[in-house]
Image (tube, rainbow, N blue to C red; front, side):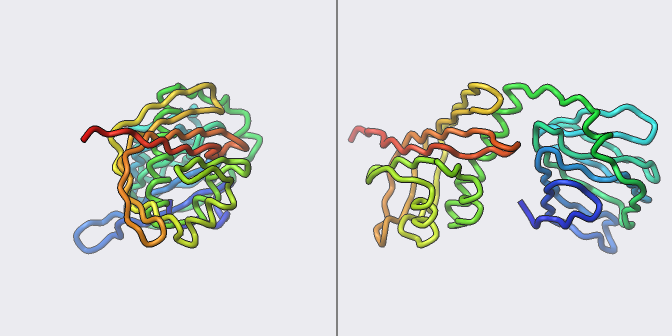
Length: 252
Protein backbone atom coordinates (compact mmCIF):
# COMPACT_ATOMS: atom_id res chain seq x y z
CA UNK A 1 0.00 0.00 0.00
CA UNK A 2 2.95 2.31 0.42
CA UNK A 3 3.95 4.66 3.21
CA UNK A 4 1.25 6.34 5.27
CA UNK A 5 1.35 10.08 4.62
CA UNK A 6 1.37 12.62 7.43
CA UNK A 7 -1.86 14.61 7.75
CA UNK A 8 -0.54 17.94 6.50
CA UNK A 9 -2.64 18.68 3.43
CA UNK A 10 -5.30 16.00 3.79
CA UNK A 11 -7.80 14.45 6.18
CA UNK A 12 -8.05 10.69 6.74
CA UNK A 13 -5.65 7.89 5.87
CA UNK A 14 -3.66 7.98 2.63
CA UNK A 15 -0.74 5.74 1.66
CA UNK A 16 1.74 6.88 -1.01
CA UNK A 17 4.18 4.98 -3.21
CA UNK A 18 6.56 6.97 -5.42
CA UNK A 19 7.05 4.92 -8.58
CA UNK A 20 8.95 7.13 -11.04
CA UNK A 21 10.90 10.36 -10.48
CA UNK A 22 11.32 12.98 -13.18
CA UNK A 23 14.68 13.05 -14.96
CA UNK A 24 16.36 14.70 -17.95
CA UNK A 25 14.36 12.58 -20.39
CA UNK A 26 10.90 12.40 -18.78
CA UNK A 27 9.67 15.58 -17.11
CA UNK A 28 7.06 13.99 -14.87
CA UNK A 29 6.64 12.04 -11.64
CA UNK A 30 4.44 8.98 -11.12
CA UNK A 31 3.01 7.97 -7.75
CA UNK A 32 0.30 5.67 -6.45
CA UNK A 33 -2.09 6.88 -3.77
CA UNK A 34 -4.35 4.59 -1.75
CA UNK A 35 -7.03 6.53 0.12
CA UNK A 36 -9.23 5.04 2.83
CA UNK A 37 -12.95 5.74 2.68
CA UNK A 38 -13.59 9.35 3.66
CA UNK A 39 -10.01 10.55 3.06
CA UNK A 40 -9.75 13.82 1.14
CA UNK A 41 -7.11 16.27 -0.07
CA UNK A 42 -7.36 20.02 0.43
CA UNK A 43 -7.75 22.42 -2.49
CA UNK A 44 -4.58 22.61 -4.59
CA UNK A 45 -3.22 23.08 -8.10
CA UNK A 46 -0.44 21.72 -10.29
CA UNK A 47 1.59 24.30 -12.27
CA UNK A 48 2.45 21.69 -14.92
CA UNK A 49 -0.78 19.69 -14.71
CA UNK A 50 -1.56 16.16 -13.61
CA UNK A 51 -3.43 13.06 -14.80
CA UNK A 52 -5.19 10.72 -12.38
CA UNK A 53 -5.81 7.12 -13.46
CA UNK A 54 -8.42 5.64 -11.11
CA UNK A 55 -7.52 1.98 -10.62
CA UNK A 56 -9.77 0.94 -7.76
CA UNK A 57 -12.78 2.09 -5.78
CA UNK A 58 -14.94 5.21 -5.93
CA UNK A 59 -14.00 8.82 -5.22
CA UNK A 60 -14.72 12.49 -5.86
CA UNK A 61 -13.06 15.14 -8.04
CA UNK A 62 -14.02 18.81 -8.16
CA UNK A 63 -12.61 21.90 -9.85
CA UNK A 64 -13.17 25.33 -8.34
CA UNK A 65 -16.59 26.67 -9.31
CA UNK A 66 -17.76 23.39 -10.86
CA UNK A 67 -19.88 20.43 -9.76
CA UNK A 68 -18.41 17.46 -7.90
CA UNK A 69 -17.66 14.49 -10.16
CA UNK A 70 -17.93 10.87 -9.01
CA UNK A 71 -14.93 8.90 -10.29
CA UNK A 72 -14.67 5.13 -10.51
CA UNK A 73 -12.09 2.51 -11.47
CA UNK A 74 -11.16 2.97 -15.13
CA UNK A 75 -11.75 6.74 -15.20
CA UNK A 76 -8.98 9.16 -16.23
CA UNK A 77 -9.01 12.70 -14.81
CA UNK A 78 -7.02 15.49 -16.48
CA UNK A 79 -6.04 18.23 -14.04
CA UNK A 80 -5.27 21.25 -16.22
CA UNK A 81 -2.24 23.34 -15.20
CA UNK A 82 -3.01 26.02 -12.59
CA UNK A 83 -6.65 24.93 -12.18
CA UNK A 84 -7.59 24.72 -8.50
CA UNK A 85 -9.23 21.43 -7.51
CA UNK A 86 -9.49 18.73 -4.87
CA UNK A 87 -10.05 14.98 -4.92
CA UNK A 88 -10.53 12.17 -2.44
CA UNK A 89 -12.27 8.93 -1.60
CA UNK A 90 -16.03 8.61 -1.27
CA UNK A 91 -17.33 8.29 2.31
CA UNK A 92 -18.46 4.73 1.57
CA UNK A 93 -15.52 3.49 -0.54
CA UNK A 94 -11.73 3.69 -0.67
CA UNK A 95 -10.10 4.83 -3.88
CA UNK A 96 -6.73 4.13 -5.49
CA UNK A 97 -5.18 6.08 -8.34
CA UNK A 98 -1.96 6.61 -10.25
CA UNK A 99 -0.94 10.27 -10.39
CA UNK A 100 1.20 11.41 -13.33
CA UNK A 101 2.38 14.90 -12.44
CA UNK A 102 4.42 17.53 -14.25
CA UNK A 103 7.74 18.19 -12.54
CA UNK A 104 6.73 21.18 -10.41
CA UNK A 105 5.72 21.35 -6.73
CA UNK A 106 2.03 21.12 -5.87
CA UNK A 107 0.62 24.43 -4.63
CA UNK A 108 -1.81 24.05 -1.72
CA UNK A 109 -4.50 26.71 -1.43
CA UNK A 110 -7.57 26.34 0.81
CA UNK A 111 -8.78 23.74 3.27
CA UNK A 112 -11.62 21.46 2.16
CA UNK A 113 -13.83 21.56 5.24
CA UNK A 114 -15.61 18.55 6.67
CA UNK A 115 -18.87 20.47 6.27
CA UNK A 116 -18.33 20.88 2.53
CA UNK A 117 -17.28 17.25 2.07
CA UNK A 118 -20.14 15.87 4.16
CA UNK A 119 -22.68 17.83 2.12
CA UNK A 120 -21.85 15.71 -0.96
CA UNK A 121 -24.28 12.77 -1.36
CA UNK A 122 -22.58 9.40 -1.04
CA UNK A 123 -22.40 7.69 -4.46
CA UNK A 124 -24.13 4.42 -5.18
CA UNK A 125 -21.80 1.46 -4.73
CA UNK A 126 -22.72 -1.34 -7.13
CA UNK A 127 -22.22 -5.02 -6.49
CA UNK A 128 -19.60 -5.05 -9.23
CA UNK A 129 -17.63 -2.38 -7.38
CA UNK A 130 -17.83 -4.32 -4.11
CA UNK A 131 -16.87 -7.57 -5.81
CA UNK A 132 -13.74 -6.05 -7.32
CA UNK A 133 -12.81 -4.40 -4.03
CA UNK A 134 -12.98 -7.72 -2.18
CA UNK A 135 -11.13 -9.56 -4.96
CA UNK A 136 -8.31 -7.04 -4.71
CA UNK A 137 -8.24 -7.30 -0.92
CA UNK A 138 -8.14 -11.10 -1.05
CA UNK A 139 -5.29 -10.97 -3.56
CA UNK A 140 -3.36 -8.59 -1.32
CA UNK A 141 -3.96 -10.90 1.63
CA UNK A 142 -2.29 -13.84 -0.16
CA UNK A 143 0.72 -11.63 -0.86
CA UNK A 144 0.91 -10.52 2.77
CA UNK A 145 0.80 -14.17 3.80
CA UNK A 146 3.59 -15.02 1.37
CA UNK A 147 5.62 -12.11 2.75
CA UNK A 148 4.80 -13.13 6.35
CA UNK A 149 3.58 -9.57 6.89
CA UNK A 150 1.88 -10.24 10.21
CA UNK A 151 1.24 -6.56 10.92
CA UNK A 152 -0.90 -6.01 7.82
CA UNK A 153 -2.74 -9.28 8.42
CA UNK A 154 -3.38 -8.39 12.04
CA UNK A 155 -5.01 -5.15 10.88
CA UNK A 156 -7.10 -7.04 8.30
CA UNK A 157 -8.34 -9.81 10.61
CA UNK A 158 -11.50 -9.16 12.62
CA UNK A 159 -10.97 -9.40 16.38
CA UNK A 160 -13.44 -12.32 16.48
CA UNK A 161 -12.21 -13.98 13.28
CA UNK A 162 -12.09 -17.77 13.00
CA UNK A 163 -9.51 -19.72 11.00
CA UNK A 164 -10.35 -23.28 9.98
CA UNK A 165 -7.42 -25.48 8.92
CA UNK A 166 -6.93 -29.20 8.44
CA UNK A 167 -5.24 -29.20 11.84
CA UNK A 168 -7.94 -27.38 13.78
CA UNK A 169 -9.81 -24.14 14.34
CA UNK A 170 -8.56 -21.07 16.20
CA UNK A 171 -8.86 -17.31 16.49
CA UNK A 172 -7.05 -14.17 15.39
CA UNK A 173 -4.33 -14.06 18.03
CA UNK A 174 -3.13 -17.58 17.33
CA UNK A 175 -3.29 -17.17 13.54
CA UNK A 176 -1.23 -13.97 13.65
CA UNK A 177 1.30 -15.60 15.98
CA UNK A 178 1.57 -18.67 13.72
CA UNK A 179 2.35 -16.43 10.74
CA UNK A 180 4.69 -14.13 12.64
CA UNK A 181 6.67 -17.04 14.11
CA UNK A 182 6.73 -18.93 10.81
CA UNK A 183 5.00 -22.07 12.12
CA UNK A 184 2.95 -21.95 8.90
CA UNK A 185 4.34 -20.06 5.91
CA UNK A 186 1.78 -19.59 3.15
CA UNK A 187 4.55 -19.32 0.56
CA UNK A 188 2.51 -19.23 -2.65
CA UNK A 189 -1.17 -19.44 -3.48
CA UNK A 190 -1.90 -20.12 -7.15
CA UNK A 191 -5.47 -18.87 -7.57
CA UNK A 192 -7.39 -20.78 -10.26
CA UNK A 193 -10.90 -19.43 -9.75
CA UNK A 194 -12.56 -16.70 -7.70
CA UNK A 195 -16.27 -16.40 -6.91
CA UNK A 196 -17.88 -13.58 -4.94
CA UNK A 197 -21.31 -13.24 -3.35
CA UNK A 198 -22.35 -9.82 -2.04
CA UNK A 199 -24.87 -10.35 0.75
CA UNK A 200 -25.20 -6.64 1.49
CA UNK A 201 -23.03 -3.51 1.59
CA UNK A 202 -21.28 -4.75 4.73
CA UNK A 203 -20.99 -8.52 4.19
CA UNK A 204 -19.28 -10.30 1.30
CA UNK A 205 -18.29 -13.95 0.85
CA UNK A 206 -15.44 -14.93 -1.46
CA UNK A 207 -14.38 -18.40 -2.58
CA UNK A 208 -10.88 -19.08 -3.92
CA UNK A 209 -9.97 -22.34 -5.62
CA UNK A 210 -6.22 -22.50 -5.09
CA UNK A 211 -3.15 -24.68 -5.05
CA UNK A 212 -1.25 -23.72 -1.91
CA UNK A 213 2.47 -24.21 -1.43
CA UNK A 214 3.19 -23.93 2.27
CA UNK A 215 5.78 -24.74 4.87
CA UNK A 216 4.30 -26.33 7.98
CA UNK A 217 7.17 -26.34 10.39
CA UNK A 218 10.09 -27.59 8.28
CA UNK A 219 7.89 -29.59 5.89
CA UNK A 220 7.02 -28.29 2.42
CA UNK A 221 3.50 -29.29 1.38
CA UNK A 222 1.32 -28.57 -1.64
CA UNK A 223 -2.45 -29.01 -1.46
CA UNK A 224 -5.51 -28.03 -3.50
CA UNK A 225 -8.05 -26.06 -1.47
CA UNK A 226 -11.36 -24.33 -1.75
CA UNK A 227 -10.87 -21.35 0.55
CA UNK A 228 -13.89 -19.52 1.94
CA UNK A 229 -13.36 -15.93 3.06
CA UNK A 230 -16.03 -13.88 4.83
CA UNK A 231 -15.53 -10.11 4.93
CA UNK A 232 -17.49 -7.66 7.07
CA UNK A 233 -17.29 -3.88 7.02
CA UNK A 234 -16.72 -2.01 10.28
CA UNK A 235 -15.95 1.71 10.58
CA UNK A 236 -15.54 1.97 6.78
CA UNK A 237 -12.90 -0.78 6.72
CA UNK A 238 -13.22 -4.37 5.51
CA UNK A 239 -12.25 -7.05 8.02
CA UNK A 240 -11.69 -10.74 7.37
CA UNK A 241 -14.06 -12.53 9.76
CA UNK A 242 -13.63 -16.14 8.61
CA UNK A 243 -10.98 -18.03 6.64
CA UNK A 244 -11.73 -21.71 5.99
CA UNK A 245 -9.47 -24.11 4.08
CA UNK A 246 -11.38 -27.09 2.62
CA UNK A 247 -9.07 -29.62 0.98
CA UNK A 248 -10.20 -30.76 -2.44
CA UNK A 249 -10.09 -34.43 -3.35
CA UNK A 250 -8.03 -35.26 -6.43
CA UNK A 251 -8.11 -38.33 -8.61
CA UNK A 252 -4.89 -40.21 -9.26
